[in-house]
Length: 333
Image (cartoon, rainbow, N blue to C red):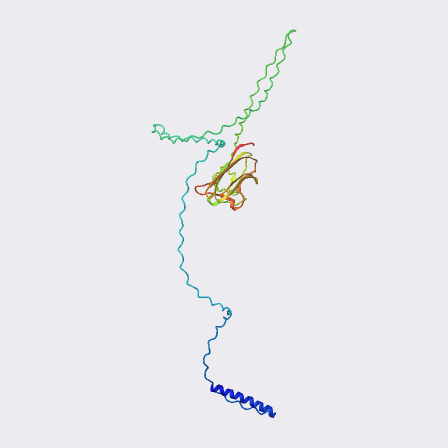
């Protein structure tokens, strides 16, 4: 309180001096030196607690913290178990018997077997012991019967006999002697036996192997499993059958469908003759077709799929086959 009173007296003195100076209107004096700072007063008593102020605005978001340290690597998980292969399903019901196929071509007659060897002969003068009987030769098959040859040409007419001499003139009214009859001509030679007729033959049956299943689309299917190809008219390098004898042929195929759909066709010289479509339903399936075709020398026949990889599900393994067959019914050469 004393300090406050001193300050108040000082303020009053200052105001009075300013009034005296303004009355005297003298020259302004030189500024005095500033006084020393007074000793600091004691801390005032705490005032009453004021009302709570309003909440301040939200501060700006702080900076993102640094990434934490990388955690340790977890332990590897256990390997999955390989499930066993499922058992093969039961055999389906037997289908209806197919139609009787065409009669096959008679096979060739075998050659006649060789004659067996003779037993050893005893020495002359003494009757030798009976020699061992030689092995009996196998009976040969009957050979082809040759065709009857054309009849030979008629022999030339024999030379005419000499003319008989004219007899002496007889009595009037009598006739002369008649000349001798000419000799008979030689018989003509017998004609040669004609050549044996050759029967045209052409047949094949081929299949897919495990290496050639699921064939590429729009190309001849190369069946590389040769079941029969005696005349080599089918070539596995190209997958095509080439006609060597003009005539009527029968072609057929049997296919196993697995893992994909199938769209397959029998093709003659680039023209699709018959089509087969089979959609895969989650289990093995079979399909087949056949056709009779008239071919000329040089015509080609093959099989191919179409529709891309999704329609090439021709399958083959140790228990399932996909085959292609063709043979000559009769030749019209």
